[in-house]
Length: 87
Ligand code: SF4
Ligand code: SF4
Image (cartoon, rainbow, N blue to C red; front, side):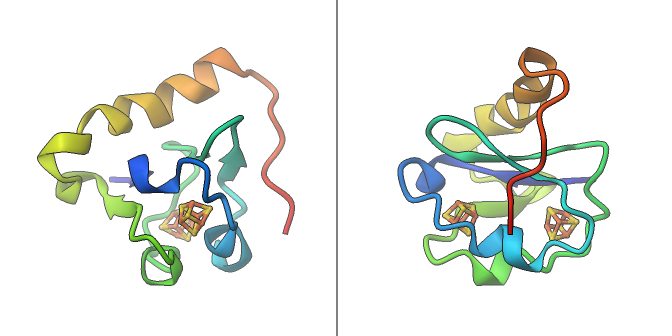
């Protein structure tokens, strides 16, 4: 079950999560970053380093941000071939 980036990342994008992800599965969109649901290995390393607490395990995404689970998946459908965010 992958981790998900939710609303607090919008317009923050400091990429602290990118720095610690061991498999480079975090990608940059126009307003926020997204985790590739098939590449994330569920290590949890990104969650505590996010300064705005935007990252959640999929089953712990708060109710008001549930749509971000699908938004993280949809980003990769909409952007085939996108490259991981640079460290
Ligand atoms: S849980 Fe681990 S593998 Fe998944 S995005 Fe975070 S750091 Fe990367
Ligand atoms: S650490 Fe948090 S705020 Fe920073 S880019 Fe990653 S998800 Fe967004």
